Length: 89
Ligand code: SF4
Image (cartoon, rainbow, N blue to C red; front, side, top):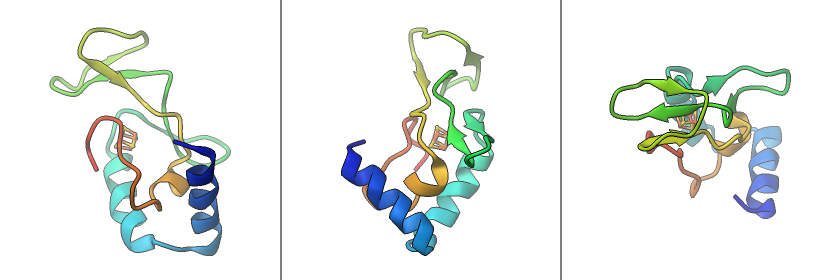
């Protein structure tokens, strides 16, 4: 994700824009093993890898596993062209 997208996402978040997009996405994220609460809001955990087929989690990269993007989800989910790294939205 480029710097302009990051800025757009945070602007959307601050202004409360695109909630029709972000709210359903955040509901999906809440049920995801890569969802992580932090003091700056929820993030997509880039310290974990997920096997999308089995739902197993790993602390290290493995074949077939994908890791989180590390983004702040309250911002990223407002961007129409953003996507979930494991294809959930
Ligand atoms: S963006 Fe995708 S991988 Fe990340 S927490 Fe949300 S659903 Fe999970």
